Image 1 (tube, rainbow, N blue to C red):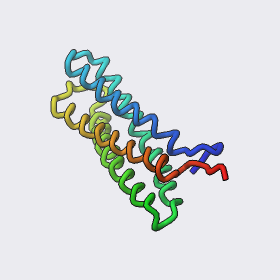
Image 2: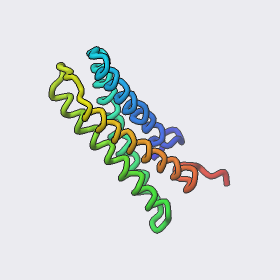
Image 3: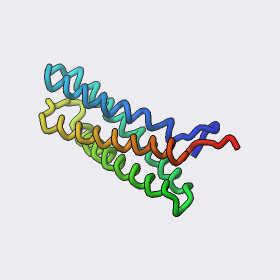
Image 4: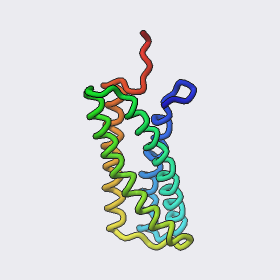
Length: 145
């Protein structure tokens, strides 16, 4: 799926790729300092990452449907999508729980930090796999032929 000849999925993924780790760092700062401003900033990073993450997921699914069957890229795309789906669903659950409590920003627990770290690690792995789709399988790259 492209807009102005540029792959929309690739344009969108940068936002959750930045906002979810920012949420983790801000949550950690809130945990260490007790400063609610860090918690508020983390909350909005989390919401922004989830909203744009779902848009990226939809455009990625459309791109997946356009890959020719029976190619190694299909299996790689399913693995990439599956790993990132775990991360996005996990962050979506956390965002929903936070949204239900808003405007209250409860102090994060160490368990919350570990869970967010786990989902960020999944995101990094999934994004690495997505990069391989581009550079190894040439998905979303126009040929110059």
